[in-house]
Structure formats: structure tokens, C-alpha cells
Amino acid sequence: MRVYYDRDADVNLIKGKRVAIIGYGSQGHAHANNLKESGVKDVVVGLRPKSGGVAKAEAAGLKVMDPADCAKSADVVMVLTPDEGQGDLYREKLAPNMKSGAALAFAHGLNVHFNLLDPRPDIDVFMIAPKGPGHTVRSEYQRGAGVPCLVAVAQNPSGNAMEVALSYASAIGGGRAGIIETTFKEECETDLFGEQTVLCGGLVELMKAGYETLVEAGYAPEMAYFECVHEVKLIVDLVYEGGIANMNYSVSNTAEYGEYMSGPRIVNDATKAEMKRVLADIQSGKFARDWMLENKVNQTSFKAMRQRLAEHPIEQVGEKLRAMMPWIGKNALVDRSRN
Ligand code: NAD
Ligand code: MG
Ligand code: MG
Image 1 (spheres, rainbow, N blue to C red):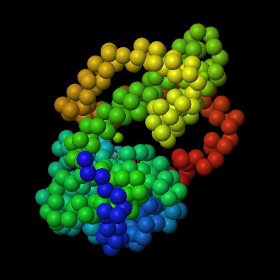
Image 2 (image 1 turned 90 degrees about the vertical axis):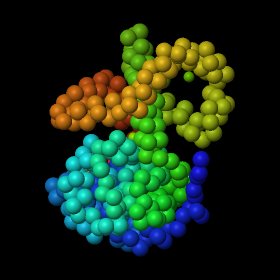
Image 3 (image 1 turned 30 degrees about the vertical axis):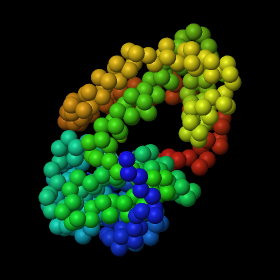
């Protein structure tokens, strides 16, 4: 596996280009601001005129244009709109307007890997996929660090797609942490698997099941929240910093013994067998197809599930407890009025 760092990239390459960032959400605000602060002078943000992002991007000192207009003059068009709308965006706004020889870039491989859009043959197609939330891509950059990125090239008519991609990755801070060369297929399938089974899906269900078990047994919801949700970060921080043994060094021997005895009863052979089925659904394209069909019906069940989660007592209890810890809200990664 090839890993690149800042010393392997020519950050000046991207500085001389006009870069259009389409979308100003989690990833968009991070890429646009990091590029600008790395010395890319010509960054424009592509947004629909009524988008809530317009005021946020302008408040950050960025130039905002309609996506179709900024595609006309851009050397690199980075698509940071939601995956589910990228096909229509490409066909309606980008494909008819992009310059021949320009580059179309993505932060996730879903649309290209599953052929949800079909890039023109005369443009480069590459991916810079930060391995962390957009708000962290921004906050790590601001403290002089970075989030590791994956880089891949799908089309290279210019012959220097990889050089431009590495330069871009370096300018958003990726080269400080490591830029790993991969393919659209590998990034797409591993990313979907990670977020579904461990990072988002697995973790949320684990926290909810633990919380509900304690509350149903008559323990105070506040206790259940601290034990099964709040402390997750404190434990994960220790793993992040020094691995699992580092975490076990910090917790008590009692906790460590309980980990070995009870952990495999919770995540067991049946869990792993189900993970394999989830992976198969990702690889076959079933998941991508289901998600696109869900979008064809206006995200009806997606919105219902989001609403059901918002109404779960775990969210209300958490809100109450966080209000008692005002330092959590200070320096918050997510500030919906700005990013
Ligand atoms: P987001 O939902 O946070 O933001 C989307 C932005 O696009 C918003 O500003 C929205 O107004 C704008 N937008 C929506 N439709 C548009 C259109 N038709 N034209 C112009 N602007 C439009 O999105 P996100 O979570 O940052 O995801 C963007 C991409 O980055 C996706 O491909 C995603 O898979 C990838 N990615 C995201 C993360 C993350 O941390 N969220 C991590 C890695 C990769
Ligand atoms: Mg993802
Ligand atoms: Mg304890």
C-alpha cells in the first residue's frame, strides 16, 4: 500500500488552479477554507442561489457562484453535495459546462463506482476522500494537523491527475497525516461497510441497546446515558491515541477482565455473519440501489427513521446532561450557523 506525505506532493500545483467546491456542507466548508488558507487564491463555492450555505460561505470570505457558472471556468470541480443528488447535478450542471481537460473530483466513490454518473472522457476523474467528518477535516487543519485521506484516479486523459490530486490532498491537510492510494471500488465498499457496521450503524445501536437495557432494569436514565453514551468518547480517545492496549492500561483490571469475558458475548459469530451479509449487499450494489430508490420516493422512510431517533429518550437525556457541561458546547466542531 502506497502512502504519500506532504514531501511527496507539490502543493504549488493546486495553488495555480481555479478550484470550484460544489456544496458548502460538512466537507465543502472544510475543503474551501483549508484550500484558501493553504494559498489557493482562486477558490469559488458553487451553490444554488437559495441555499443556506450562501451566507455561510460569504461570511467566511469566499466567492459564491451558481454551480453551472463556476463549472465553466474551473480547472478542478470538487463535488461535495450529497451523494444521492450527484448524478443529476453532474448531468444538468457540470457535464455541459466543464472545460475539456479539467478535473472532476469526489470525496467518496459511490457515484463513479456504481456508474450512477458517466464522466465525459475528456476530463480527469479523481477522488480525495478524507477519513473523517468534514468538521474534523477543518478543525485538525486549523490546529496544524490533518485527517488522513484516500486518493484514487478513475480517468486520466491529462496524464497528471494523480499529481493534482496529491497537491489538493496536501492543501486540505491530508499530507500531514498520510494520503493512501486506493481505487474508487475499494474506498467506496470499505467506507460504506465501516459506517454501516461499526462507526455509525453498529455504534449507535450498541449505545441504544446498552442504554435501554439499564433503563428497563430500573436504573436512572442519566446513569445509563453516562455509562453507555457519554463515556464512549473517553474510551475511544484512548484507543485513538495508543491502541486497544493503551485503553486497557488506563481502565481498571476489572474493566479489562469484563471486556474479555463479556465483549464476545455481545459481538459474536452471529454478528460477524451478519456483517458479511451487509458487505455482500454493498458489493453487489444492492445497498446503493436501495438508497437511490429511497431518494426517488423523497426519502420517505429515511426521514421517518431520522424522526424516530430524534424522539428517542436517549437524545433528550443527552441534551439535558450536556447542558450541565458547558465546556462541551464551547469550541464545538459543529456550529449549524457557520458550518
Ligand atoms: P452535506 O449534506 O453536509 O452538504 C451538502 C452541501 O451541498 C450543502 O451545502 C447543500 O446546500 C449543497 N447542495 C445540495 N445539493 C446541491 C446542488 N444540487 N447544487 C449545489 N449545492 C448543493 O454533505 P457532506 O456530508 O459534506 O457530503 C459531501 C460528499 O462528501 C459526499 O460525497 C460524501 O459521501 C462525502 N464525504 C462526506 C464526509 C462527511 O464527513 N460528511 C466524509 C467523507 C466523505
Ligand atoms: Mg461515507
Ligand atoms: Mg466503570
